[in-house]
Image (cartoon, rainbow, N blue to C red):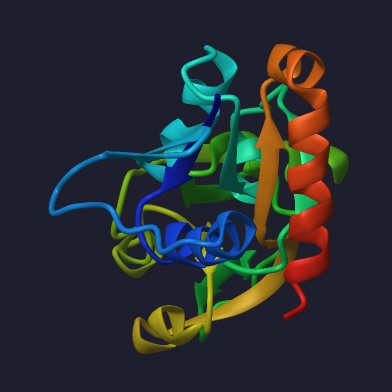
Length: 204
């Protein structure tokens, strides 16, 4: 039995489409149900941020999650494959009329991606004041609470609409197929077979 943790939404849908080819059957979660079992597989729908926790604690053997979540949580999971969908970027943004000065020792950065932001500025040997927010991050520089933000950007439209510009890209993000370390050894044959199948089908 292989237990699979999927993030709710579009990424789960894209992943299930590949599993449908693998299992040669239609896979549909019944209304509001969070678990779907078929053949030797059990699929579960969880929040994107929770996928690594389910896998790490052995509630799931494998799963699909964004690289941003893996990096932010410094997750020790086996990264099997970049699935090349769910693409976006982690970017630094600031107001259009503001020149972001990386040499400013008192930079205030608003973000929900605390660890990724810290790592980025540590590499530049810069100390910044990180303001942890959980939503509406674009608001922080507009009301003078922060100089800039670090956030996920898909098209950049949200930033533009809020009069912000992109100053730098920290990293490119996509969804990854990942595994629990113990499961990877105990169920290696099946997991590697899946890995191979996914590798051949992500380009389709």
